Image 1 (cartoon, one colour):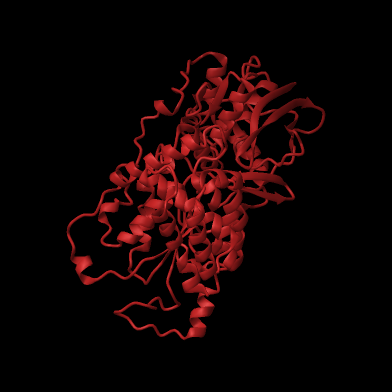
Image 2 (image 1 turned 90 degrees about the vertical axis):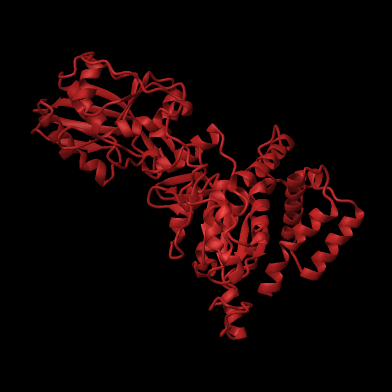
Length: 514
């Protein structure tokens, strides 16, 4: 007898429909044949499913059984097909009386006892179910909590194969989980962020100002200073001053993390922006994304949030260079033999580095022991094209003893975030009806329209470009930063102070690297 169960397969961060077809009663010795381009984890489902069926009180197929995962040209990976395969076997062997699951999308890993375990990509499956207009989803409880964030989809948590069987036969009634982000009671960590508050940062007023400008326009930032200057401390507190994402933005973020196997139950706070800080030994694939079946890397996991690269020159040159195109486009396309996927990666790059290999160049309390050649080699690890894509270069000087002893707290994150949110509101109004959301993502046409400067300011900028030997890309980025500074000041037009401050943030790359 033939039975068909609807499930799904992940392709990047999106889900595609997979039909689990189970046919029993075939001639030949009792055996199970699994086809449809399955990976090793899918092939191992036979042992898990048979043990789960036996321990749940059901009997095994007594004839040859063929299981097909269609379409056959999509590679299937993971253990999410255990539950639909088991239900398909129950229907094909007449243990499940009718095709009550025809209108459901079903996924879940099974333990040997029959208990369900969470799977990756539950949010993508919920979005697919909403698009298809299915009756609902049957998922393990932890995965169901994640999928329930999508409104308009009935999500039923099933704790075991037996409970799924009883629900489909009508023996038990399961209520769908409340839908939508508002129904989730998990508190956001934005106000009580365990990483700390900006009030804990001592001194570094110029660095605090640069960070505020960078976050207000989602500009990329490079901090240069000796060890102990507080660069990492500042970077960890940047999420506390970022505006909270909209529900749509958060679902987009959670969808990427779900495809990578990280969910709300794994510590991703509700309605917060991601903060990723990979170690400098990370590979190109780990940073960009990829794998046999292409999946998200660190730049995609930082989408709508912060990617912090500490000790920037210590990263592999190839790993840094692969970020050049994603920094410009806000998305990355990965091609592999198993397929091609395009992943979003609109993130704010925050990086930190020492001024030299020993770290103490320019530090009045420590002597730098690096030769000019060593300093040049250290700085040459970062290419000019990559530096051009970093909007703000700011120096973080060593703190004095007096600053370290200071007990008076600085300005809290909440006050800084209020100013940043006001600047972001101006940008949303300015770019209403376009795909642009922040100043850092302005197109050439938008730069000409919204970053207009008069003739005297134009001559000032031309002089700065010539003296600092800046590129055409740096010219555009100076205008974008100046527009953000004007937004923070509540100004309609870019004035001389705004432009001069933006130029100041571009001077360090030429002073330090050339």
